[in-house]
Image 1 (cartoon, rainbow, N blue to C red):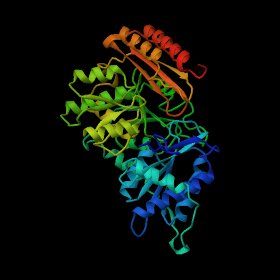
Image 2: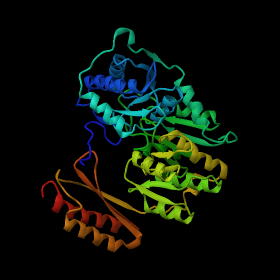
Image 3: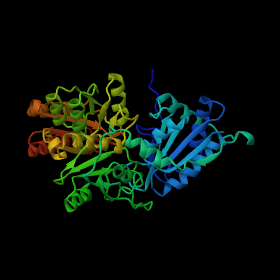
Image 4: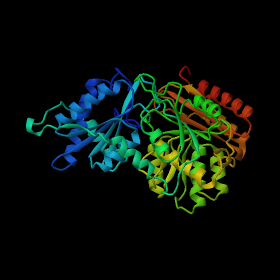
Length: 453
């Protein structure tokens, strides 16, 4: 049986450059109608969809288009305005909506935008619902009779609701009094949320990246560019720095020495703290890109570790199948299923900060037992029909590199899900050797299955 392929939905919704199909106003109008039609069939007498967005300028345009389409399908709309992606997941659940829509391109620059959906329970949409929406997109728009049209209203207390939710994700006896934090909100959706969360928990907060203008989201800031955060932590002599991405589902931290602490290290800190408190979480799910050092450090703590494919959807699937509650990616997308239903940068940061507060040890001390292996990655442009597994020379070269590394390293060839390239990653103890081996392997891939081969 041939596997069904989605036309629009990728691993994390629909994303692309604004003005280039499908990221256009007319498509968003149709998408709002298609989603509204699908969810109207699932709901009761009145159906409701929540719409939130990040701070990029195109969000206004797409918010209006989605609203028009969904109301034409007879679905009520609750508008949240700028809100982090995980906040939309939370409010979809607590406001008893059929679905939540996030208008965001996450960590991308303002020229891009996209759509993410949440089901009524605050989790990502299952495949069958995405297929149903795509099937509806192939049909012409029809409007329900006037008396059945949906209504739109604004949720005026959305920010306050989510701030209180975030604060409730840590023990009530914990206070961060005396901790000096620099927050980088990436000029994105956490700009009016994160500072209040940490201030209300007692921390001294210095905020950067909190002046969005629609065009500066993720610009030299946030979790993908934490250099300014590191500089500010050192300048302000802060205890810790915390950076989110544009839609607030990722977090990267900086210790008091100015060292960047990625998602692997944050996962380790949270897992170690859970184990110390005898809180059951099963084990940790990482991805094929998670550092070998994380796996070894968790093994020393007798914490099981498993790898999934890259992408939070696959991490979530592995967690649910195993009955575990903690997982994530080195990029900082961390899932704490015992605290919330999706990856949440603020909630994840609070878990790490709780470990610091409880142990009265610095972030640098808490990550000191995790020795990350050097990684080197090379992107090789490949032909559309390239077959990595079927190329004997490539597989022979991979085996040769793996033999040289032994048990102290890894090789990964991963086709990109968004562009015609294969990512050649080598990981090992010696940075110079790792770089050399990655370059050599990339040359073999280029020669055998590259775009010009």
